[in-house]
Length: 482
Image (cartoon, rainbow, N blue to C red; front, side):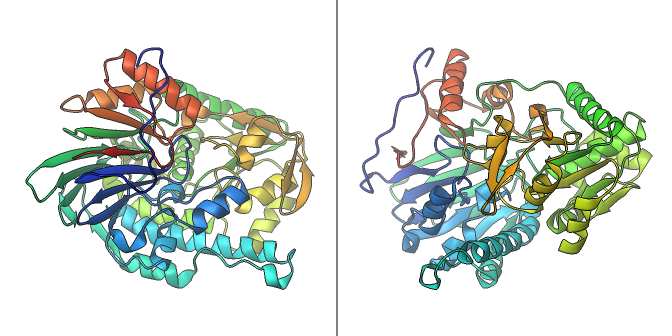
């Protein structure tokens, strides 16, 4: 690719032809709504089925009308349990899908928690919106608790490393992606009736090497067609020591001036990593003994799943458990339960660290904390994960001093800080290193789950380092595999 932008694939409506085709429907030149569709004569397989998160109008249009021929869908295969990769599943089920949903064992435990919370958030959000609309314009949630319950009944847990039939002619195998608990890179083997076959590799969201808590990503093996995320395709993260040092410095400085650290963090993965790092910093006396509040009932439930899957921790985390006690529930850490306790945090005296969802400030309790605590200049709003275009988190990170939330305008006076190295996504070096571990060079590499400038930068970088035919598909583009 060198200095050229990635070429486009053909987008020809629904008329793709071939014994096996792959279509890029979501998270193509964006980082949300992950959705890719494999089509064979036997039917369609959905690779991820994520909820689009961003501007309300765009999200509403995408999430309510999934671009799928639902009667053709025979299987769904999930990379992990983040809502932008799994959150549209109950809508697919509501539209009539009754086939299997393949996921790793840990992901299968996380899905009921996350999807139930998603249904609750939607219900509350719709109720707020409807209060401002005439009754004949009221909207309904995308899905409800019964849709979630039916979705859960269709989940089929698959252990890492074990090949499992997904649908006629397609076999799926998961390897640890090191992104969050249960995350997987997916290997698909596709066979068609005339005896031909091909293989597809999909990173999902790829984690990083040598970071705390989770194991390093495992190689996929040999694939002909390779889909890799590109979230941080234009940059390189700081080293782990720098990440932990910076977290300690921000907490210590904020506490010294009597302020609070507000950390928007997804309930799965980022919250548990933060708790581990904060406990380690406190154990080593690198931060004051400040109270930590995890204001998320979902994070509490997810943390219990983390505890049960301790075999998925890396060696360093297992050693910490052996020498220094629990990873997530040290003294002075409170998991906040009901909404009354959450509201009480807004009148809390003295310094504190408050961790709450959502990670991009697209709903959840953290938005309320930012509204109430964001007017105090002593406080810090600390972003520790990627902020997608169109989200409130992205606008505030980009410097907005006023913002709209829950129908009203608000002012932000708190300082805004970012630790991008805390992201659970691999940077461009990590993405290249993982691709280089494939047993053979793929025929074609597709860059997904990245904004256009990240895709283009990573395409050049990978091309300069030996990968051939790197392309950046747009929504609707497709590829003939067989």
